[in-house]
Image (cartoon, rainbow, N blue to C red):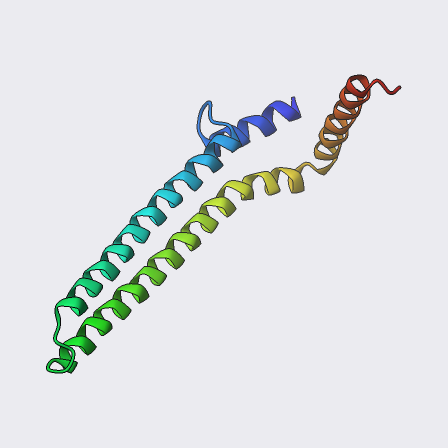
Length: 134
């Protein structure tokens, strides 16, 4: 009965019929997609700056070159800020997912230890039978 309540608490924070691995994969995939977008935007900024620098007459337009380089620096700084914010959001999502499990373990330490011991015993039996030992 305690295990069923623990499971029901767990299911509510990850969504119906969603395993923790699926939830983690979803979060990681979303953040990786965001990183790809940021990487593409930064690459486009560099390409745009390189194109402008090739077209600029360096001897006659030093201020123009400085402005192009400043634009690139601004875009790179924005990229770093976006990536940092994305990382922090991913870390917050992870902690939000892990927190209910921590609470379950703290609230029910004996059943948690028994479940872990049972899983360990099952894995030991499985490994012993597959390797031919025992």
